Length: 152
Image (cartoon, rainbow, N blue to C red; front, top):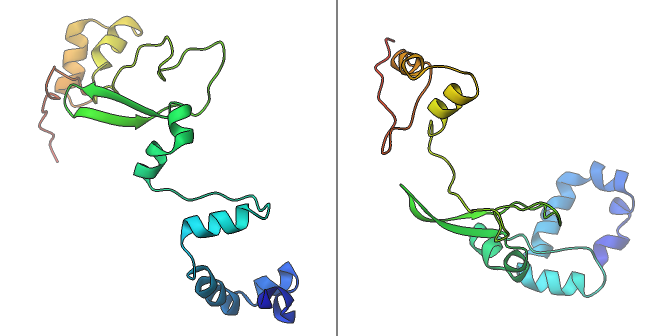
């Protein structure tokens, strides 16, 4: 309350000019309460605010659960993983958020390279193998990417 009346900080221009003085004062004031106490105090007076959450808290909060923002599945290499869901939810589009779309793990590096080059570009398998041998592309081979020695 005292800072709001201090003539050094009355306008935004004043606050910008006195920034080096103001920031330590604000840091001291904000350290008096924790995040949730400030959220309650400010939000209770109509200030638009919300908590800054860590990753774990973000996935566990009620809003994230309601919006299906934490997607869980078994990854072929990493095992059980949790990833963020797509934030946009469309009424006529299915996404991997528990709707009718299948939930697939993120692809491994190079997992779809051969398939894409053959089906979309029209390459033959031996052409893709040549590119891979030259270190131009990487193809996932079930449990690893084919190691290619590169001349330095």
